[in-house]
Length: 227
Image (cartoon, rainbow, N blue to C red; front, side, top):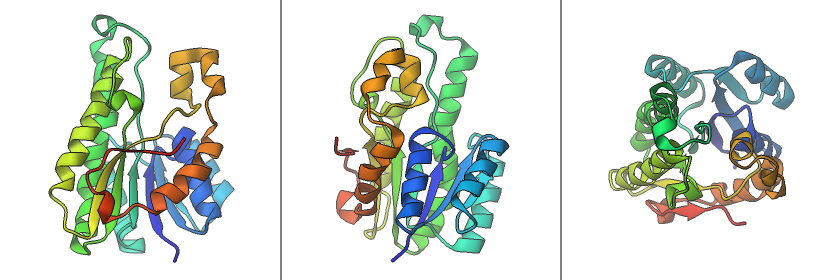
């Protein structure tokens, strides 16, 4: 049976790969990205069976409006994937500006909270659905020069596990590490060294079935997409 899948950060990288693969598998994809032009391009590429909107996840009012419209038109999602994230430019923590640090926190943590705040109640009401918060290998380990990003991904682990304890028995909240994927963020860290990692489309071919199979049995588990 086709599922309703909400994805943030849907216009590039992992989000774009997943959107295309879920659509190919016959599911309805509802997503958001920060910038209007890429959102429009994705809408054209995947067609009118899917719905994409320009939304800044750090803007709680904008997220509330998007969620209200989505829930009214399509009902509660079966799968909510909080994917939108950025990474700081490689630098020691003391050299990361306050502005850059704040931007990483705003998107990677508060953005997830905003989206969850406005979509999860409808899922809870129906005691159905899975919430996936994108973590990272750097949400379970650390490296120099990416301390702000590590902090946010460790936060995804704690936030997800705590929420898992709050959900009814028919639901799940999972912190998910995608593994190593060749995205702009990985390139910003490793440059040409990112070239050996699997591309988002290849990742999505493995990740989409994995995500679709998640359920209450996985609630609160720190999971990783098979490599």
